[in-house]
Length: 90
Image 1 (cartoon, one colour):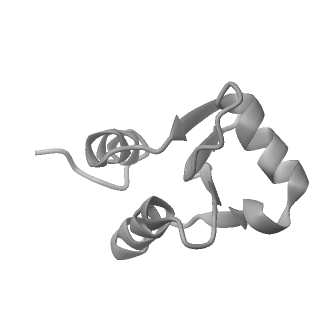
Image 2: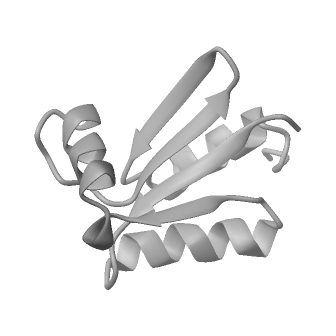
């Protein structure tokens, strides 16, 4: 799969930890950027979320297309993972 997932997260963010754990459980590769120590990443999160500092913010790179999910719930996360072929929906 050519897609890549980047998680923009924050230290101590429960939702970031939950998404990372879920992806690990499923064997989905991802890269995590801690916005607490990266001002450019923090500005990016603010920009894509219209001024709101929402973590985790996921960027799924599909080549020419990028999908952004801010604080995805279980349903949103499972839907995107199924689209990427990592999960079979029931």
